Every structure is written in structure tokens, then in C-alpha cells.
Length: 332
Image (cartoon, rainbow, N blue to C red; front, side, top):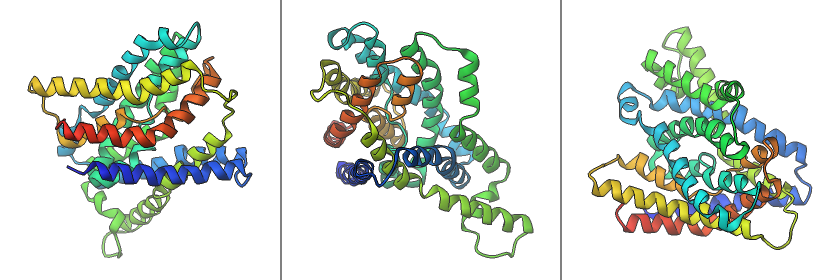
């Protein structure tokens, strides 16, 4: 098992890159329009390219049989995080603000912040697992997440957003190609034209996609920092609701997840190490950056959303390695 120090070093390095993005936005090096373009580039181009090439390189029928439950596990994590949000919402929020409170607590940053940590911990197998987590998380965001925030879900709109999600489409396409053409796993490392013309063309395309995909982590971290720098926090003193979001998202949710994991272990349920540890890591993550878009789109508390993202990201620098250390010490 990888040491918790790896998590500490990675999250500290990531935080420094986020700070660079934040400073660049605050100093005017990156305009709001540039931040928007970078975010769209990551979501629509770089991440799908990374997902597709990762699926080609690592997916087999055996790995799918072993990891079939991974999307279900990510959905379960969101449901678990929702519980403390639901329980403490009356203590920290009021009126229509409660829906936003519960939404922010339930939805973690499940891919862009965990990605470099998972890559360092478990390599290709871990990254593949994280992308399978993304499938379940996206489905939950557009259904259960919208229901929490808006009080209802339009099935047609949810289906359209799910079916046109670039990351999900890239996941499906990568899995299909990898299963139908197992030799595709070698396209990314193809260095000569001794094979068929198809392999030459496919190798060129996949290697170009791999180069674009390699931009996902640094560009996403810069974009997150710039987005945080662009958020209007509205108030100088953090509100009671904000502290409730931070505590429930970074402490209560992870503790409940660990408790359920401990109970499952005592009951004889043994998950493989990689999906189990990625589940714990994801549970410790701060509020997802995309929550700011959802609070504005579906009538949530925009101010609380902005503050929740900013402060939970900041405090996660401390809470993530500490909780992960405790999880390892407890043998979970």
C-alpha cells in the first residue's frame, strides 16, 4: 500500500499549481474568457483524449469483470456523503439554502483533484478505475444531484446531458475499441510502420490523443485556480452555513464512509485495494468546481456555492492527507 506521504506531497504540489492559476486570474494574466476556454478544453478535449487512450491501454475483459461494480461504488459514495448533509443542514442552513447546502456536501471533486494522486499511487490500473468511477458520478450528478438542488429532475434533459457527456462517450468508445481490437493497446507505443497501414494511422492518432490527454492535469489545476480566483465570495466573514459545508464535506462524510467501510470489513466484505482506496480518497475530496455552475443553473444559493468550493478546496490541503493517514493506520 502506498504511504499517506504520497498523498500529502501530491496534494501540496497540486495546491501550488492551483495557487498559480489563482494568482494569474487575480493579476489579470488570465481573463475570465481564457478561464472558460481552458475549462471547456479540459472537459471537452483533453480529458476525453486521456480517457480514451487510458481505456485502450488498460481495459481487458478480465479488468471489466473485476471492476464492474466501480460505477456503483461511486454512486454509493455520493449517497453516503448526502446523509451528513441531510442531518446537519437544519443546524447550519435555512429555507431554500438547505438544498444548496446538501448538494455541496454530497458532490465531491471526484476526478480532477484525485487524478494525479491516483496516478502516483496505482498507475494505469488506478486511473482506469477512477475513470470508471466517473461514469457513476456523472449519472448521479445529473439525476440525484439535480434533484437535491432543484427539487426535481427533467428526465429528457438529464438523459441528453448524460448521453452527450464527452468523458462518458470517450469511456464507452475506448472500452468498445479495446475489447473489439485487443491489439489497440499497442497503438500508443507504435514506433514503426511494419504493421498494416491501419495500425500506422491508428498509432499516429492515438499518440496525438495521448499528448493532448497529458495536458489534462496541469491545465485542469490551472483552470481550477483561475476559477477560484474569479469567484465572488460576497462576504468577508465566512457564514455558519459555509462552515457547515466544509465540516460535512471534509470531515463528516469521510468519517461516515470510513465507518461503513469498517463495518463492511467486519462483515466479511473485502473489496480489492485499488477501488477501495480510491473510494476513500474520493470521499475526502472538497466540493466539486462544477457545483458553482449547477447552483446558478438550477436556482441554488450562488454565494454559498462559491464560498463552499473555495474554502473546502483550501482546507482539503490539511484534511485529505490526515484522514487518509488515519484510514491507513486503521487498516481499512
